[in-house]
Amino acid sequence: MNRMSGVEAARRILGLNGLYAVRVEPAHDNLSDHYDQRRKTFRLRETVFSVPSIASVVVAAHEAGHAI
Image (cartoon, rainbow, N blue to C red; front, side):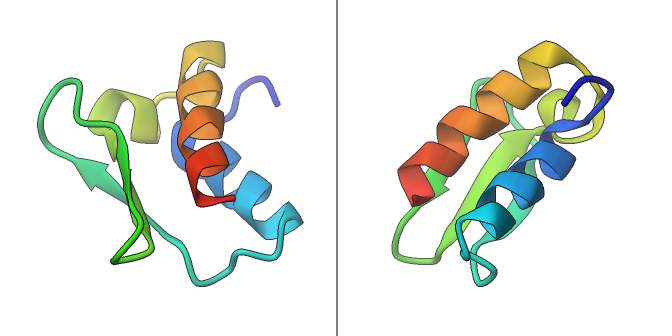
């Protein structure tokens, strides 16, 4: 999963778990990564959402875990 952005990792993890209805959106505040269970949406700060890095994958996997 290297060279993946947070959104790519999140979509892959969610898809592997059959959670196609969960949306992944960019958040515009720092430290705003969170899962909204009522809206079936999780938000990742822009650097996690779009920048490929191991850290982005880890944060996205954590949030995807809440959805799972």
